Amino acid sequence: MLPRRRVKDGKLFLYTSKTGATVWLPLPDHVLDALEKGPNKSTDFFFCTGQGKKSTAVNNWREDLSKLFTRAGVKGAHPHRFRHTLAASLLEQGVSTSEVAMILGNSARVVEKHYAGWNLQRQKKLEQLLRTTWQKPGSLVRVK
Image (cartoon, rainbow, N blue to C red; front, side, top):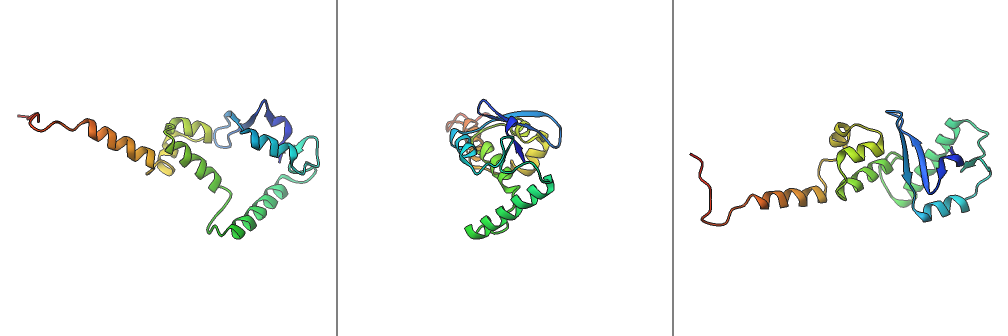
């Protein structure tokens, strides 16, 4: 259930479930357009009338996504996978673990543990850091 009041000035207002912190996340224009053009039956909510139970809405979405994943041939998929994809994509673009943690509502330690293992951006950065330590031949510093 997404109340329309939570989308304002092109941003989605959320409370993180783990910390209770408030977060405003910008939404791309095509997402905002799709929200407005969707089969909305309510002036107060996107995707639903707001008359049913929250658990019913969640279960309906979970079932619909499961069918979509099956049709797309995505094995082992679940709705939380979108969260994993967002975290990994942000880290690959060089966003720090602390900033990703703020977006997800986690601690940097949790992001480091679950999402920041290996990614291409991190690999390139580590390679570059290592290259900066290389010495020219003959300029090796000897430690006594």
